[in-house]
Length: 331
Image 1 (cartoon, rainbow, N blue to C red):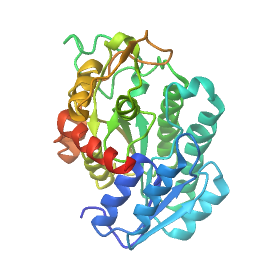
Image 2: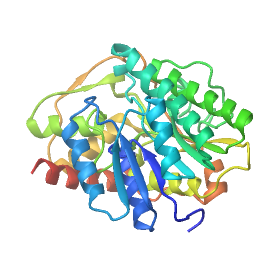
Image 3: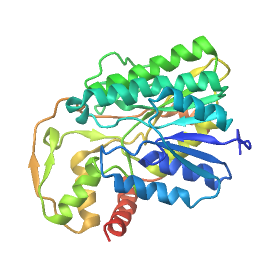
Image 4: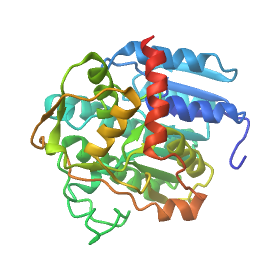
């Protein structure tokens, strides 16, 4: 396995959706992993505790409960662990929630990211892989018309339409400055609508599933005209681990799209979900909400060239696997 050694990999946000799966993949290939998470109450902490319990069953795993914005504590952890690779996935997520609780994003996505950078700088970390977001591209309503194609990493990112997007772009800029100033390689990943088992309850596919099964109406924003580049969690993990194994040269900072490159309309996603659940949703059509974007569409050629990344799981299969997990989770 490229890039592996006997020192642990630190994974922040390890009790989160992507963090769980990345940590498990690393453990499965024989890595030691230190997970870091503060277990906040943005959504049901019981789901985070269940993810953590799943990880605790692996030999070679240790969970540390810590707020990454506590820069002294995180710096000490990096130093004592001897880690040379960090996968930084901890963040305050959610576009709409950022309109209600802006300071949560300041602490986690700005102070937290800076804390990770400082710890990596002083701890001799040789590669930092961190989570950014497709939201940095802003609203690109023409992306599905064939006029522009998928979003490319060198497209403009100067017009974020949510505070969440602005904080994720700020994180990229902080990383660029640290790579330039201090020389440790960094790779940023712009995630495109990740879904699958153990996912986040605030995501549409997850919340729609519960409401459909309870016979409650679902709110369909943008009158159903939105589209998303839904990317199954296993494909995301392929990309994350592939990038971890291919650091830039010393002082390098690279940003990669990590998506499916096959946008699907919101109404098609709902219809697919209805088919797996065997029930029709009661739909209430709503206008676009502040902070939302019309469409996301990843150009993944840069990531493919680096790692051979090629998504394998189509939406119909991925949603089916999610529904199977959801039924077990709800018992």
